[in-house]
Structure formats: C-alpha cells, structure tokens
Length: 148
Image 1 (cartoon, rainbow, N blue to C red):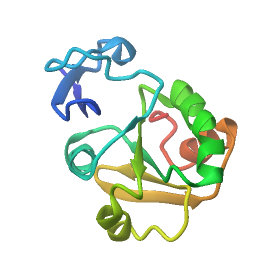
Image 2 (cartoon, rainbow, N blue to C red):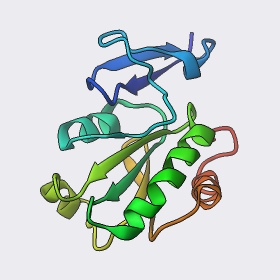
Image 3 (spheres, rainbow, N blue to C red):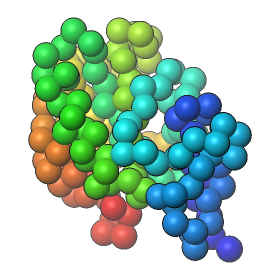
Image 4 (cartoon, one colour):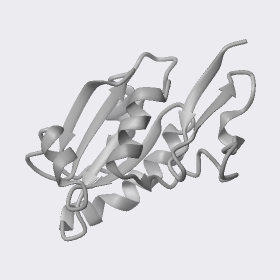
C-alpha cells in the first residue's frame, strides 16, 4: 500500500498517511492535531529541516519577518493558498529574524521569499508579495499535474 510521509508542523513527528485515506482529515499520531489546517505554521530550523528530509510531499516555505510590511500583507493570501494547495503541498512559514542562520543558509536576500522544495531539493524560488491566486499558480506551474 502506497503512503506519504508527512512531518507534523506542531510537534515535528513523522506521520505515515496511506494514499487511500483522505489526507485532509489526517491527524498527527503523536500530538493529535490536524496535519492540514489551511493555516501554515511557523516552524523553527530543526522542524523545517525535518520537513525537507522526511516529508514526501512538496514543501512550500514562506520566509518572512514581523516588521516586513509586504510579508504582513501577503500572510492572508498565503493562508488562502494553503486552503487550495493542501493536502498535496505542505505549507510552512519561517521567521527570518528568529532563524537568521537558516535564512543565510537558504540565501535569502529579500523578503517575502517563497521556496518550493520537492524530495528535499529546491525546485523554485520567488520574492515579493503575491495574491493567493498567484501563489497557487506559481506552485502548480512547478509541479507535475498530479502533485497539486
């Protein structure tokens, strides 16, 4: 039976979800919270790296900072995009102020920046605020038709 591995953004545990089971209603086996909430979670460096290493689905990260006006403007659009892309893509947020070393490692030069990963490798990057429709279109344009 085919399954997806998905890291819980709340507790960082790895969950196995059978492809025959509706992923949109899946709950974490450790903390009991929903895996997909259409509300991207802020993750720390360790959880982000665990997502890249263990999650079998594409992972979209929004690198942002609380003082950034365009980041705050894009936050509702990113959340709306999560409602359209989940459960085929995992969406997370990374606060560049709290995770400065990881932001430097990712080569972040401006925010907001979104990076799309598949199998732990970067497959797309864009900077600047976008609408929900633009985010969804940008992600779907970089993935196989069956993935998103």
